[in-house]
Amino acid sequence: MIVEGAKAGLHLIVWFRHIPAALEGDLIRWAARLGLGLHPISPLYATAKAARPDRAGLVMGYASLDIRQIERGVALLADCAAQTERPS
Image: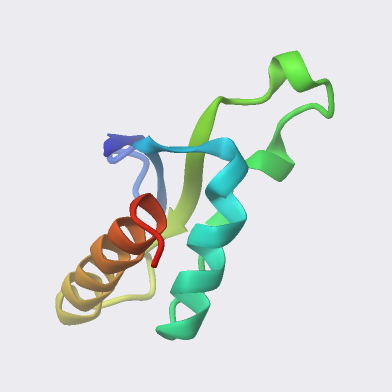
């Protein structure tokens, strides 16, 4: 995982090195099953295929969460990423 924008204060961008962009929707669906509301990054890019990222990415807001909620969310996100990388 690559985390960007951590100093922004309200949100950050997370890129998944081992999850291709084509599986971004799968990541979102796994997260929804676990109660996480995630926002894919792909809609924020131009529609031209060449302009889109080649790996899955998320925009994650954390301004209204306490540390316990963030820790729980990160653990669940790790589970989602593992399921997406190795689907059953």
